[in-house]
Length: 384
Ligand SMILES: C[S@@+](CC[C@H](N)C(=O)[O-])C[C@H]1O[C@@H](n2cnc3c(N)ncnc32)[C@H](O)[C@@H]1O
Image 1 (cartoon, rainbow, N blue to C red):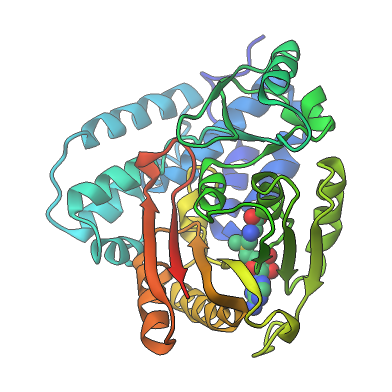
Image 2 (cartoon, helix red, strand yellow):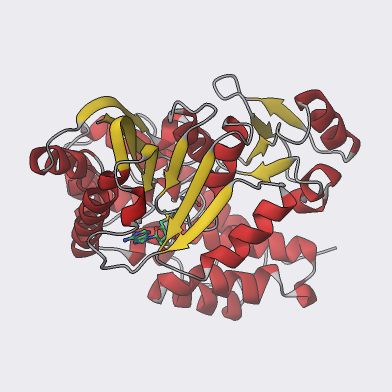
């Protein structure tokens, strides 16, 4: 079937792209509504158009040069390939050239330049323009790894073990994961490498009192349940009451019976006093810019500016200061964000340690987007 790859990109698609750039916070919904769920386009066109928009959000400065012309999808691909080839091994001397070549704001590159060399920044930005791989987490609380892998294989889902994570499987080919038997039975969850790595660093075991202080829909709480084989108590906390319906649905599918949910007021300086000094582990997976997830969500780089990053950092420090009260002496406080910007990572922890006595740095880890085929993230384990 001719899907028009050699025809000019249709006007509706160019308009949609402009709208995504104009309102990046809506980009995901717009792409879903007008492309992914628009059955009238046919599956091949849907795939091609989605890829064209995603590439365009990654490489805005390249697209801008041809957007007003009758360029075809094939020509866009050739132009992009040429642009990317020219970036290989290029030596950078200034922030502006990096920002221009990789379609990032100077603010963001300036932030990265506080911590990384120009050549490292080029590697980071290039890797953020590649697609992320998908990972599953096995729920060994319900089923053994060989049975889970057999079931996935029977459903045609190709996976491979991830060497440094006990429950992780990398999905080797695109598949409808939520339709497979193992997913429906709660034997697997879709969870990025980074999220699993964060839980892996929590030093979990039986008989612990654990708080997931910013739990959202509970991906990490559910991983904690698996790491503790249901033999610890998990307190899942959030300020957004809407998240708990989905958390409860997920808990039911994965038969997680040790997760207790709590909603707390956003501004409460002393939330859940009954937990004060009682927790063996507190995870603060704080709200952030999510810049570590640009492989999957390229529009985010247009959504937040330097002021927004500063605001995130203020919230992150506040949440950390409030939730550290739950940690008992000898317990661990784990700070995590899916961002690699210094303002949201080391700088927050440095300020926290200056202001709060009784905690010391134990393990600090950055996973840069080029070091993993999943998202980039930061974690810092602190000991009380
Ligand atoms: C990065 S998300 C957490 C992701 C989650 N841990 C997971 O694995 O899917 C940040 C969450 O923090 C919540 N949040 C924001 N401010 C908070 C606060 N002051 N106390 C607790 N949770 C907060 C948000 O509602 C959001 O659900």
